[in-house]
Image 1 (cartoon, rainbow, N blue to C red):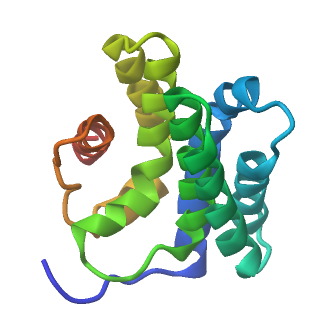
Image 2: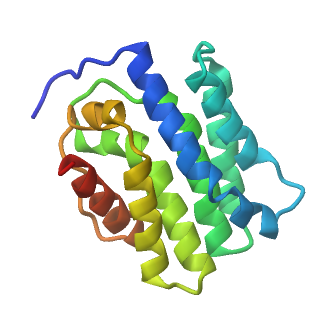
Image 3: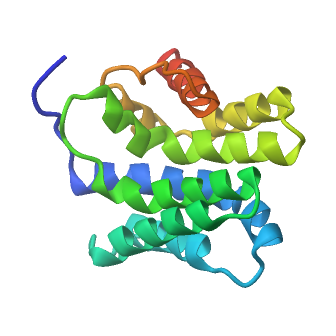
Length: 175
């Protein structure tokens, strides 16, 4: 698949809303390790602000980058992945209309990173990550799935986050 994907502002809001919901669930993992650091929470709030109808502004971009900086500075792997989930949530507003599988990360990245954060917080228990992926699957609206289907399938890459994203992608495409 190549070329452009049709995306409306409402489509972007659907994606941002979903990503914010997924990342919200993992914020407590980050905040347990870094109680005074609000950067990931600010990113989720910026995604939610856009999803609720505000214009897409530099707020989403700057909070996404700040959450990713928080991830690099995180004290634990679980906190790092939770912060990445938040960064992906804010970045979801910048889904590009390019029919490229890497764009699926803007749609499902927050859910995959949140699942990995939960998995790590549970001592690496893969069943925890799988449960979070199932929760993310159930949370997806038909509108979200319709946007996802405009893109090629997520790459099945070698990391655990890529595995989780691919599992979520496959589950949503089968619904």
